Image 1 (tube, each protein chain N blue to C red):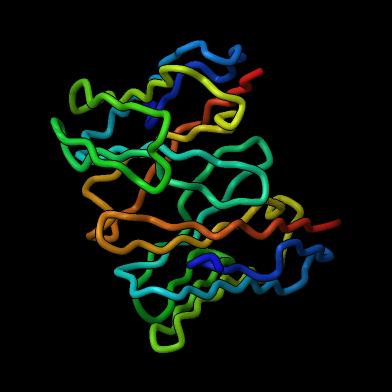
Image 2 (cartoon, rainbow over the protein chains, first blue to last red; image 1 turned 30 degrees about the horizontal axis):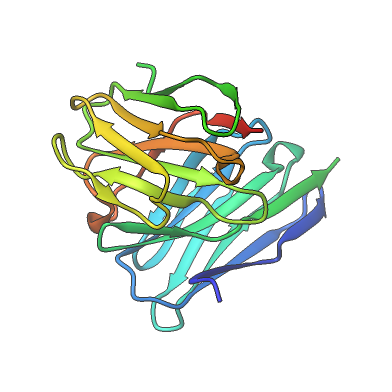
Amino acid sequence: KNEVEQSPQNLTAQEGEFITINCSYSVGISALHWLQQHPGGGIVSLFMLSSGKKKHGRLIATINIQEKHSSLHITASHPRDSAVYICAVTRNNDMRFGAGTRLTVKP
Amino acid sequence: NAGVTQTPKFQVLKTGQSMTLQCAQDMNHNSMYWYRQDPGMGLRLIYYSASEGTTDKGEVPNGYNVSRLNKREFSLRLESAAPSQTSVYFCASSVATTGTGTTQYFGPGTRLLVL
């Protein structure tokens, strides 16, 4: 079993829909990261959080340390949000990644 | 400010050949990392360098060597390439090691095909 599990693996939405991507992990962590991988392959960090909630534009990330669970929400989704979203956890000097959720937003 | 750069962008090797993937960052970061990404799997850490002069193994180090040439540059070497090393390789850097939970900045990736 992977240490970091994401669901769903694939997600198709209509423009304007509210999107939720989930991440569960099984180890103690110092922080959790959400990353976005563009269709061209580039990877950018969206959030790093160790507790509570963070918001950036239409993106919201939450984490529940006790339940070892995090969610990434996208409000008012847009076709340009189409990408692979990756959850990763850090512990000690190691970073472990989920397999990613492929999001497609249709106009 | 170019961020993290990688060369080459794409490479084809024959089994047994050697090559070095280059990575450089201009953000004055202390820590640098090499990952590989395979279809259906998450990124996996090959090696990392917490600071100039130090390197440590990650999750999948077999078949690879690294050199932290200076604070800016961190290279990954395949001494004898194997088809199992066909992958996309990403270099990343951060201000400090992931133990402090710092944000990593990724390069554009190198796509490697070993025949």
